[in-house]
Length: 152
Image (cartoon, rainbow, N blue to C red; front, side):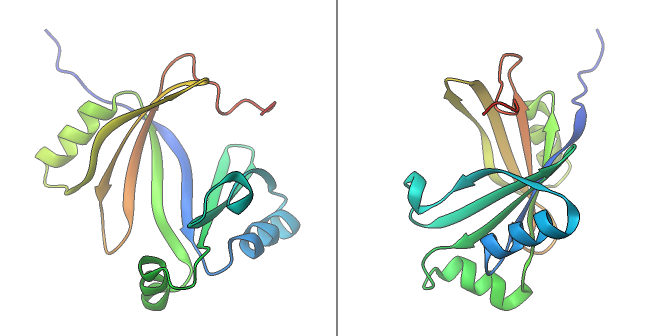
């Protein structure tokens, strides 16, 4: 019987908390050739946080800002750190195994593994704390999941 080993398949995306998500995304698009591929905000029914997703080849950045200036979590974080990375997200082949192994090795769990399902398939995610206020999220897509397709 062989020991189970979870595999990191690569970086999925990096989440930045910034004062102005639209400006940050626009800057990366105009200066570095990224393309905006997704948006979430007031127009899509999200009233707390706006997200602009930009992509270039295999690099994906998510820029997030609070829509409410009284959002204490965002304002405290930005006041302490300024614009910066909040979450480094990794694609893995077994979220449950990797999360459990990280906890066994001393990591602090922020969110235990959970599943989200929609018309595209199933995503399993878990999050651990790292240094400072940064976190790492592990994401596992089922084989049929097509959220990264170029046609929507």
